[in-house]
Image (cartoon, rainbow, N blue to C red):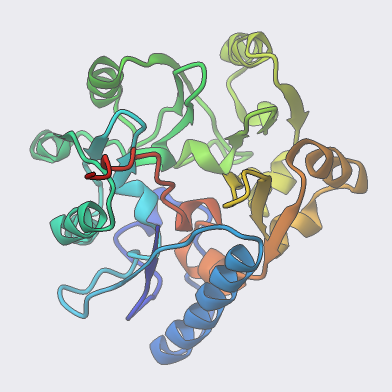
Length: 304
């Protein structure tokens, strides 16, 4: 699922906790929206040309949701028919939660068995921003999460209890000592590989995180903090209609990877799907993975 933006712009309510945002760039709101829309449509085309089934949902003009292009923060869809709604730190991001989107997926033939609504934690100033705050190993049922103002351990505990996941939580900071705002900018878990910026994880926790990943049997590909800053950790493995694996990432992430890293990822995923989204990255502080909410819901039984 992807949300096509109507008024994308740098969100002043998220800048304090997202060091990846670059608000100082001078451009009009109209220019930013126009460029972001071009990048969005280009990414959709890249995915669809590779056989990925992309469902595009139109953003709504009111209320204004500048970060609607990042739907993976407010919702996740699971193979047992569970949908989870998440508590968001920025007040203007809370408007992104749309029940009409869930109704649309039901109409598309997907089966929703239950909705786990964690948004009530906002009243306690406790947050968990979906598969931004967590990187899920859906095969091993492990949720990896770095602590930040957007990721609260109590909400994590409720998620893992409701969905029967184990939790591996840790601290991670950049070179300036600022907490990494979302786990999905420092790591990506695929079916056969893990990309991770281990050097930003607290030293006293790093070994345990890497050991958990090694026990999964996946190949670990480490990236540097500089590569992470270029969103080389913000990728997502997808499966197309033929069942082939693909890896979606931005042009900046691709350019930051070494030739050897690109070769390993291509071998492990089949094909790298690359799209330039510099405007979205600069103003939104997120990349390709943040723009994609993957659908694992089962299909409704066909009546006979």
